[in-house]
Length: 245
Image 1: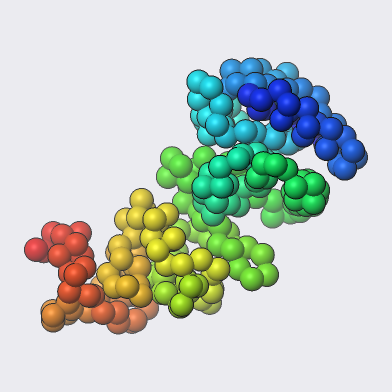
Image 2: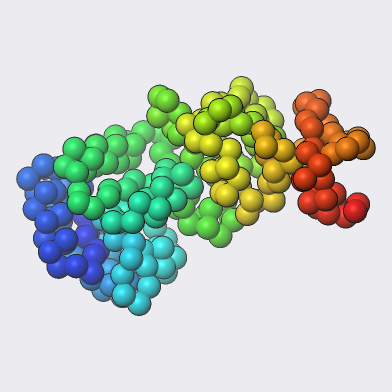
């Protein structure tokens, strides 16, 4: 597989190139970039299978580069010193990521996953999923489980339920999934898709609401006949969403 490394720090580019050459014999680094502009040039010239992409760079970031590429035909491995970026990439798109300083075992695993998945029938182009999430063209989310991860269509999520420090996802037409993140974590991600926290234990997709029953906070009934409590503190926000306050 051909690779390009894009990082504004020369030492970081060289260290990663040395690691790839020594520990990933199936990958050949053909080009480098130090900014969004030179990164795009390197990608267009070398047509890589993998792009190792630093997120924070001068005059733009890694996401800006992906936005400008257009037809993405490669997999992206995000390389960053900022853990919040890595977690965002992981949970919104299942994109691969490496935290600086680079762990050689994690590098080997990322390359092995890309090599395996690019040979599978149901191949998911992760960089494309990331951009689609950011522009809301294709609404998918990566859900980390104890065994690995699942890619889910956001519109198919009926509601999310807090289970201690985990979240149980309930879907329209598939069994529930217990996910290794808190409900608050997914509230931050899904609020941009109109999901609403109606209770400390429940985050709902308003698309599936079929009935509201009055009370101190009230109750909602969803299309799957599940009835959930609306906490008094969340009542106004819920009713505002439906224009009924």
